[in-house]
Image (cartoon, rainbow, N blue to C red; front, side, top):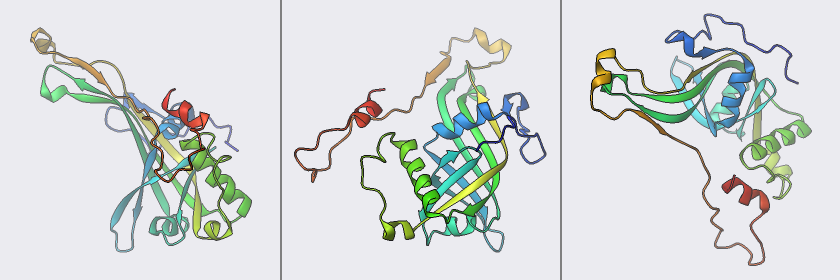
Length: 222
């Protein structure tokens, strides 16, 4: 389960250096940012020192980030070795338009996580992890769709990355202009950006009698 420590210690590894006032180290800020993001970016360093950043789906279970993919996946093989990983997510909430181009910005909530992974080998734990992925994206789907069979389960790797250190960085609110620029007749403010799901589009091969499930209707009509 999730440890009862509510905040990550501030260290040289996770300290927010640029605009530190926007930084946060508490799980109550960091974990909702991680949970809302549809994908994460996993940073690793290959043999020879080549850095690689791979976008992938993720789910969080307490103090772990779950990653999954084909057993042949380069990312999963690397993550399973226990080598250090850096995982990032970002949610963009608005375009911030200032009176000067220099002070334009975005409102965002981002998180940087550090940790090490381990292969999930127990079949029940693996199934629970795959259910967590499915339910994170589409609540209600796991119990409706056919679950993985033995062959599919064997072809899939799941890695649990223990979050050892993390920080968030958040910007909210209107633009901040230079004092003399507030007199300029230039529109300034915020253009909000929202993530939403459109109406489901049925597969042309869908059986005629299959109706749209309530959980999918709820997803596109929050």
